Image (cartoon, rainbow, N blue to C red):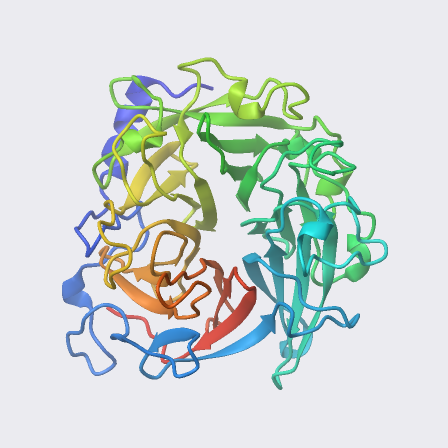
Length: 479
């Protein structure tokens, strides 16, 4: 049912009850009932007023991660250094990650490997484990990392033979949805099967991953991230694409369908309804691109327009809509379900977008009110090589200690940074591993930020050369 202008105006008033405050390089405007606080309430364990974050980042003698005082890290996997149970090296290009509670205190991490194109182009592709291969020509996939209470680490293949596995997303029933950010058809770029799909990986049951099956009901395009609404059963998906910019999608399950482990694999290829978001302002005018929003707290109503051909046999999904039919966004990236809705990222906007340039947005989609609200806005970073500012947020998580944690995939310095409940940003970690030269330093992006089930450890990946790290320290809730 389309959302009427009167309905949207009423819901806009309600959504406007959130808090919008200016931050260091952006701001966080809360969704209703979520993350609301004021910096005057930030206090330490003794009740004293304190600044956001955990203090300045200290250089790492090992040259890997700069962290605040009292924090430390451990490298869990390292491409070309650590090995899988099979004896093969850990694959490279770490990306999206989620942490699951296993038996007897074990933590299970599913780690995407964003490897595009034919296997011979990569030194450390995901190994072709028997029974777990979709396309033997493709280099990507994901691994499962088992972290035991005593500190021992094991790693094995969850799925292989997929392409450009990017952000992905965890399900409420404890599995991982790995997303292909590549839509090559069989015969293109050396591939022997069609790509551009979502696959389910179960970290708890290796047998459930045998004979990988693409979830074609969720569409074939350059997938980035996915989350599941645990109440309504909808899947929300982002698309990282340009020319034209990508779309924000919703998949509605067929009547009577009930989610659970392995049940997505039972669906017909055309099951449910895949639709793209169409946003409009309070006057009912179409918002053609999310870059049009220039103020924190901007709220748009959302309708959903059904995708004509979700398997995109002849025309990419995002090109199937005429002008004025849907709303686009540049580099729609990571996503996280929290506070009754979906937080999702637009990494930046420049000349490829019709609105204002920016270096990062985070939107909050509220399924109850059918609105999106601009929660974080980063202005253009004038000097990415200088400490203090951030650009290009990518993967995202909601912290158990309040606020958001984002992985930076921008220019220059690369950080994991947080945004407090009131919107002030602060650094949590800086990548000090120079993969360039002393004269022209280069630092790879962070990815896969997520907390352990008990909230004590922040996991993150460094895409090149491919590392998964565990960060611990004096985490605390403020306010």
